[in-house]
Image: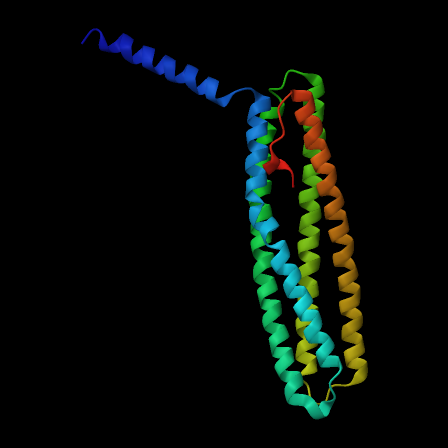
Amino acid sequence: MKRIGPIVILLLFTLVMMTGCLNGSPEERIHNILEKTAEKENDFNNNQEPLNDLEKKEKEQYEKIIKLGMDEYEQIVKLSDEATKNLAQREDIIEKEQSSMQSSKKEFKKIDEQIGKIEDEKIKKDVTDMKKVMNERYSSYDSLYEAYQQSVAYDRELYDLFKKEDLKMDELQGQIKKINTSYSKVLKANKQFNALTEKSNQKKESFYDSSGIEMADSTKE
C-alpha cells in the first residue's frame, strides 16, 4: 500500500507532461483553431452552388410571369407558387449557412486566450491583425445575412401580388422598386464580405509565415 501513493503521483505527473506536449505552443493551438474554424464553414461553402442554382431558377420563373397577360392568370398563379417554394428552399439554405458561420465564429473566439501567451511580438501582431479582420468578416456576413433575408421577404411579397387579379401597375412598380433597392444592398454586402474573406486569408498567411507553420488547405476559404 505504501507504494501506491508515489506511483499515482508519477502517473499524474506523466499525464500532465503528455497533455502539455499534445497541446503544443500557442501558435500551434491557434493553427488547430483555424483549421476547425474552416471546417465549421463547410456547410457555408457547400451550399453556394445550390443557392446560385435556385436563384437562377427563380429568375427564370419571374421572367416567365412578366411575359404573361391576365388572360393567363392560372399560369401566373402556378408560376408564382413555384417561385415561392423556391424562396423557401433558399431560406433553408441561408439558415444553414448562417448556422455554419456562427459555429465558425464561436470556434474562432478561442484564439483570444492564446494571443497573450505568444512571446514573439511579430507573431503576436500578425495574430492580432488577423483577429481584427476575421471579426470584421463575421460582422460583414451578419449584414449580408440580414440583407438577403429582407430581399427574400420582398420577393415573397411580389409573388403574392402577382396572384392578385386586381393588381394595379403602380402597386407592382412600387414592389419592384423595393426589391431592386434591397438587391443592391445584398450585392454591396456580398462584395464587402468577399473582400474581407480575401483579406483574412492574407492575414492567415502572414501568421503562418511568421510562425513557421505550414498553412493547411482547409484554412483557405
